[in-house]
Image (cartoon, rainbow, N blue to C red; front, side, top):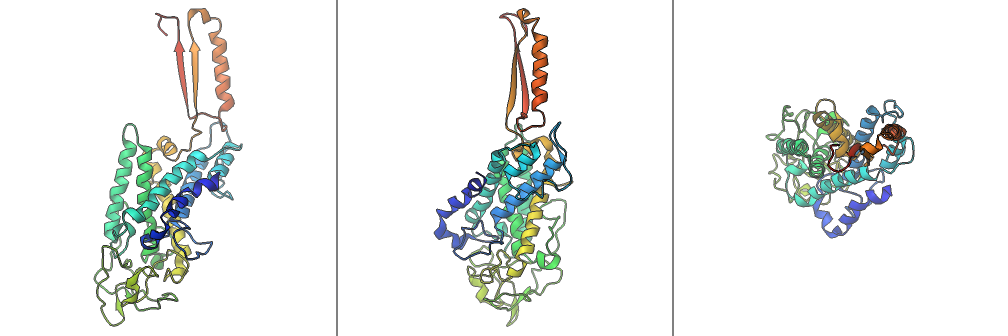
Length: 379
């Protein structure tokens, strides 16, 4: 069940396979996004999002054990092997439990993430390309505010929020594959990114950022910057690669077989979207870029102070990711005069039912009590 659900977005994308060679702009959407053989250990947007959301959900559940159920040590649920919605819910509730509702929420987010590569094909800011880092940051801030807006509405629109989150995460994750952040700082998330009260590191828009390198075997030493941020220009995007500064230096290209700008000075590129040299000139940093993207995805949901959990609270967070059991327990009790001798017994039985399900997979998400009486009498 779990594998079938995860693969649904990939099946949808397969139907459009002839177009996928021109719409990949950062990490690949999924493993069906290219005819090139990816390293089995490579990460796609789908996998980064799946792992990030599951880790965030696991951390939340560790910190919020079921009433009357087991308690968890730090990392106990996050480090499940394998970690998937079913193993997570089973460990949390203490019995085999379907994680289908959680997977449905994750799939909605993944689908929206994947659509960015088609809906915003040529927009450099949606892929943090062409040194549009500040514009991408503004776009993320706007998107985050929209997410918080629909979640604070009455009632909250969780479906719309999940779709918006997918777009936000695509931009966030592409930052690590398409910029030089990882070259500067390693496999750590940039915690100032996408937050309106933070100032970003300056971008090297007025200086040469790369020098010539091999377009076939990788570009390990082509970056010229030590402190400033930059991102590669890619053919077909809204930002065109500027003319070279010298015979061998200028602005970095995105690079890879799908980027014609890699052939102009400075040759090569800097993307880390795969570990395949012909697709990603900085292929050797793919693992670090992916790990930074996974942690940034986790932080988006649960980072203290600025994660969604801190902004919307536990109840809405549960609903956003479908972390509840999904069941309601309804009690309808006759309180008319003729039932006077039985009401106390019914009340005791009701309490026993509630106590017997508390902390189990059958524990309801909420309780509803309705009473009725003889016609014409007050309940």
